[in-house]
Length: 92
Image 1: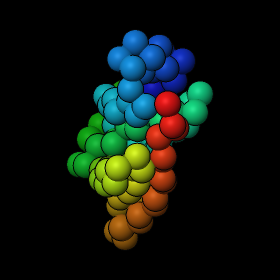
Image 2: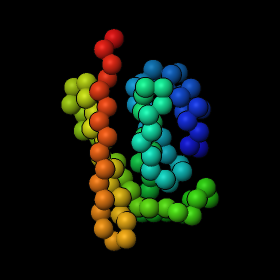
Image 3: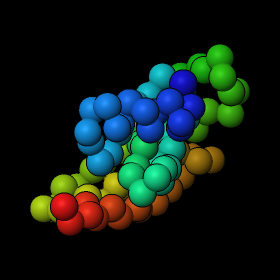
């Protein structure tokens, strides 16, 4: 859970550019080895045995050809915060 070396192994095995995983209830958008690991978090802020600092969150991916824009929505102190990460697939 959240082990980016293990997630990289799965990403390589699956042959994907972006691996979406979860179970930690903590959102992350992490670049690893030139690819991305995305964890949408928990939209309800549900309990996690890994951390008590859970922020309700979800992820919206906009796929535009070789480009993907990842929007992360978080509820922080009653306000919605949106961050954006862009990923462009490398030419083969």
